[in-house]
Image (cartoon, rainbow, N blue to C red; front, top):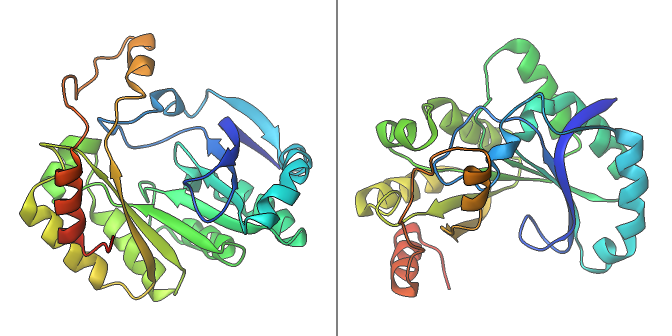
Length: 243
């Protein structure tokens, strides 16, 4: 089984519990204005790897992962574009007793029966899903990412119905995702789900701007600064995140 990846991080600390071996898959259907990996959009780029080669590399870091109650996280790009590959990878992880996490925007979620069947197989070997809810207002979501959020919210509801543990993540961008009404509506939606273990507010940063320039792309959020501590605290209060 082969998959196409963008890169690997062997000691991730923010993509799930503990120390994580993070695999960034290649390809994404969203075009987020603040994306820090625009070079991961192209589904035909990246590097082709096998499940076996990844598992062999993952084994080198098992002591660190297990000592910290960490594991393997597959991010992107959009990992659900590679559902069968993820399932095979996670099956091998489970043989080694490794905690498995998917970090997804839900951007490729579909009611297609074939996609649904593959997703259910992936659920069987997935311990946690990090769900990126970028904007609750559909019109603003289209402007921010290029797509509607309707199927993404449907994906979040499915995870709740299936009782798959999730962490909800929201990138907080001043002037873009900081509207008080939007944050309250997002909080209401999150509260309607029965499987949320944690809500994380991710402050916007400009660390990926250089990649846009390297690719010859105009960066849409040029001049937007990272939020202040006061702005972050206010947003966390609106989302019901306890300090």
